[in-house]
Image (cartoon, rainbow, N blue to C red; front, side, top):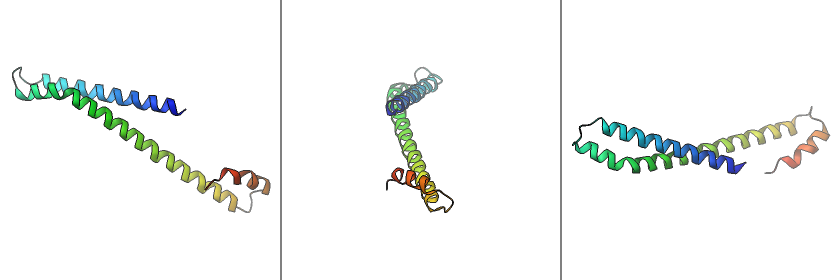
Length: 102
C-alpha cells in the first residue's frame, strides 16, 4: 500500500513539474523573439519545472503526514471514549485494549 502512495506522489509531482515547465515556455513564447525575458524564461523553464515538481512532492508528503496524524489522534480519542463508556460491554473493552497502543 505504501508503494502505491509513493508512486502516486511521484506521478503527481512529475505532472505538476511538466505542467509548470509547459506554462513557462508558453509565457516565454508570448514575448518578442529577441527579448531578454523570453530567453531567460526559456533557459529557466527546466529548473522551474524541477522546482515545481519537488515542491509538489514535499507538500504532498506533508499533507499525508498531517492527515495520518489527525486520523490516529481521532482513533485514539474514540477508543478511549469507548473504554470509558459504562454502556460498553466488558468483552468489547477487552477486545479494544490491545488495539490502543500508547
